[in-house]
Image 1 (cartoon, rainbow, N blue to C red):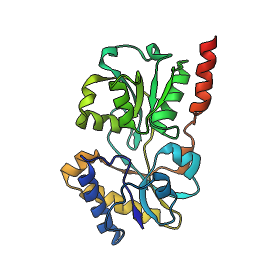
Image 2 (spheres, rainbow, N blue to C red):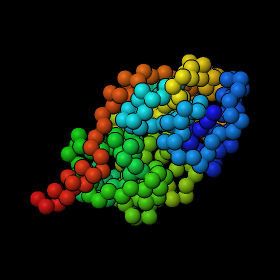
Image 3 (spheres, rainbow, N blue to C red):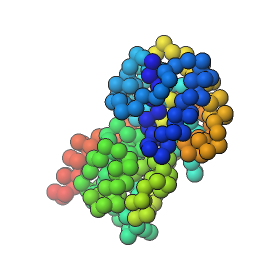
Image 4 (cartoon, rainbow, N blue to C red):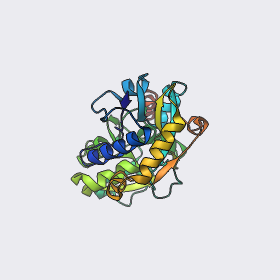
Length: 257
């Protein structure tokens, strides 16, 4: 079986994630001894051996719905968000502090990947609703890498999920050169999933009990406040915008007018 908590796993949080999994495993009464690390996320999510992982709302509604079971959704206690929700934070260099989001029309936008709710889907919907079209698109492969691209001047702005932004501010020195511009509307945050055939209610109880019983330092490091339950329709109702290819076509067309 596979246990995988890779979405917010970084060197500074790895030990806390290990303790979290140890507690979940104890409540389950079994499971793999160690978390899987370094594996391809899609191979993990689609494996029939999947016991526990965390995915993003966009991959769930576009490719995983019907192929996995929802377990529950963590509450990270994020500002301006109801329990179990998160949002995207538009960030830019500190030199651009105070500029409205509209000032970034036509400027280079960094995003982690096209199937990211907080890095692509939510910010693109937010920009579209305000008639703001970015300029060049810079794909980075990760939220922290998007923030770093902005800090280093390879992009002018980016959107990170709100929890990643908190972690970047806590642990990454380059965050000192960044500023928050605006936030999107909240959507359900990254859910825990399991393979079809597993009992999601048993897993929900184990994860919920593990969060309650986790030591305070680990809970604080992981920003865990609790566990809530959403129905699939809550994720499926979130809009999915056009991807980077169509967006780049719009950018090129705008440049010609």
